[in-house]
Every structure is written in structure tokens, then in C-alpha cells.
Amino acid sequence: MIAFIGLILGIIIGVACNVNIPDKFSPYMSVAILACLDSVFGAIKANLSKNFQTDIFISGFFGNALLAAGLAYLGDKLGVPIYLAAVIVFGGRIFDNFAIIRRLLLKKYKPKPH
Image 1 (cartoon, rainbow, N blue to C red):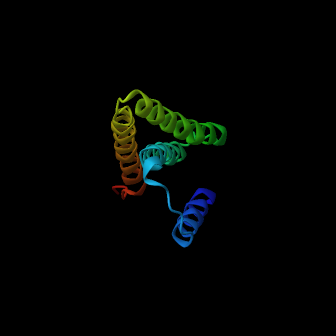
Image 2 (cartoon, rainbow, N blue to C red; image 1 turned 60 degrees about the vertical axis):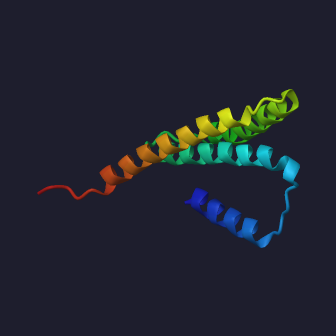
């Protein structure tokens, strides 16, 4: 429940605040946001599987974001679009986690046969 409240508050703050990110930082921010979404979907999956740990979520959330943004920056400096690899990996993990979440929810709320 706390995670849901945090999510709603984050969305409200994000919509209410007019934050403009310069164009040159948008590749880094987009990969960092994708990494954070991967952590959020992983946390939801872990919560539904009854093995959620706050310290693992927080370290993964910030660690993934910093690593993804750092790799995108490094790739930019080397002239190699490394951020595409992060997009593919994190995107794939998000879809995998979503599929597992969907199955767990269907199993949890599926009517029991009499």
C-alpha cells in the first residue's frame, strides 16, 4: 500500500512540477527512467511472490538508474550508442516481469472450482 501511495504522489508531483530536461540529457534520463521502471516492476513481482526486500529494491532502483545513465554517457563519449543495449535489456526485463505479475494476479484472483 505504501508503494502505491508513493507511486501516486510521484505521478502528481511529476505532473504538477514543470521540469524541463535539456535535449542533450534526454538519452541519459530516458535510460535511467527505464531502469527505474524495471526496478519497480521487479518490486511488484517480488511483493506478489512474497519475497520483497526493501534494501534490495532501493539499491537496485538507484544502482540501475546510475549504471544505465553512466553507460549511456560513456557510450556517448565513445561514439557508441550503448544506451540501445540498456533499452533492450531493461525493456525485455520489464515485459518479463509484467508477464509474471499478470500470471500471479490471475492465479491469485481466479475463482476456485467447487
